[in-house]
Picture 1 (cartoon, one colour):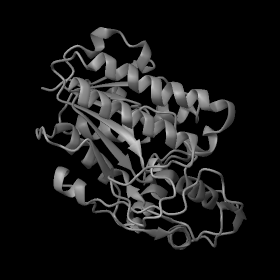
Picture 2 (spheres, one colour; picture 1 turned 180 degrees about the vertical axis):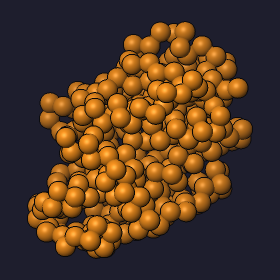
Picture 3 (cartoon, one colour; picture 1 turned 60 degrees about the vertical axis):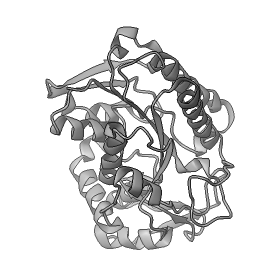
Length: 320
């Protein structure tokens, strides 16, 4: 049985990945330090079911505080821990992004480069590394120019993974996530904010006029791809892979879907565009298809409906 470690296990993607792996029969060690980016109470709820499983071991720590024995014999390491958010990455808070996104990643790479047991390190990168490219279809080979400090830290961490892969043979693969949504989505993310506003019958704040487009990716599709990357035995697996839906959706179209799903007539308050927000994203997922057998299956409507139903069931945690 593989020794598996997931950092950021109490987060949106980390907890979803851990639950899938436990259901599939794996033993998982999860690490999280409950940063204050959003309520630790929500993160604690994310791992509530995991903590009842004998196949799950939880360590409350940041990755730089781990005892070396935790890493001994690790075979699959999923590094999902990060300081998220584009808008908060400006100003004084940037130091948190440098520590949690850059230094923590380099620390892990240094520790893992001597682990002969390691079969794969999966790093959670972001479509934010692309910036506002003139190309409509974002392929892994494009030149990169992030438009936020957050994007810069993710690109730097990605470059570190590539460096350690090339110099020390660390079997890294960086997965560029495109706007992941679904049950447990972070409360600062757009769909969570929109659905929450509907449930509370509040105005919805939208940055810009809603004409911006996004490649929205459902959480279950992302988890499946992460597992494929982590357990791939292909030594030639690419070091960088996009993970999106491969479909571009206008934000206003998504808002119409939310109105239909919730039965609410939306009251929208348009705000100025925020610095660091990308105008359009669309992932070229052909490499993911070839390397991982990746084929996203969830429609945006079904995914939004699942997220809304989850929020309705978890009002006590989300709204108290």
